[in-house]
Amino acid sequence: MDLAEFIEKLTQYKQHLDVEKLREEDRKITETIEELEISKQSLKESLKKLRSLEKKISELNKYEDKLEEIKADIERLIKFDSAEEIIRYVEKIKGKINSLEKDVEQDINKIIEDKIKNIEEINDRLKLYAKILYHFLKIPKDVKTFTIPNEKSLFKLNEVEIQAKRHLNEVYGIIVNELRKVNLNQNEINILIALMEKGEIKISKDNLQEAIKVMEMLVERNISIKVKV
Image (tube, rainbow, N blue to C red; front, side):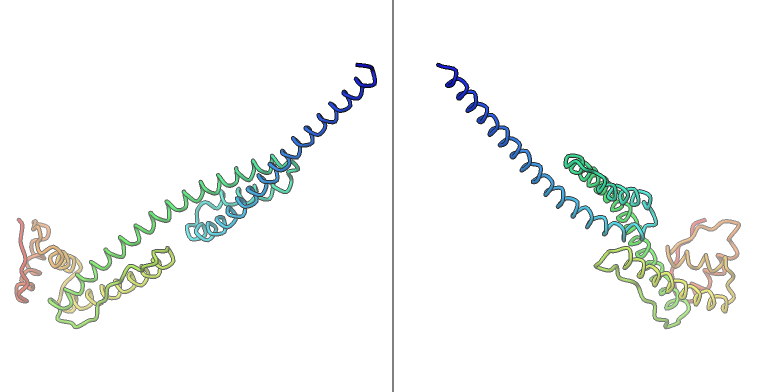
């Protein structure tokens, strides 16, 4: 092989290497573009989730610091020049939002459970007060109970809970006023409510006279009770 042929082969080999290098670079660029597109969609979903979390956090009055931290992270994205840095940071933001979402949902679910339980307890109390009104006081007062909404959101449950508490206080106020008209003091009212609720009472020397007075009134109205001494 003469020198000219050798140089020609070297030139061809170099061109081949250049083509392979270009192909590799093109492949990497294509992969990076695809990863950036995935990151773009991921960020879009994260922002949508963040907007939903903002509303829930405002209802909780909690986690505002974590929310602001995530917002600051999102603003930092524009400072990155490297695609790799952007991709990693978007993934970091996604992780923070998912973690915050988990904490928020756990808190909201606990509050929802507590509110449902409270509404149910108020309903039980209202049924008891209705019993006192109808059977003891003989007053035809309309006492209503409250339905747990199908949409178990904090907003809806708050509305129901507020209405239920308001109605409970109203009915209790009527009962207290009417019982005082029949000469019952607060201790005697409490004894009456306990007896109407449980159907029995434990008597001690501290409540003996008041309990006897209340029981006599119940017997007069044909309301059965049990006594424990």
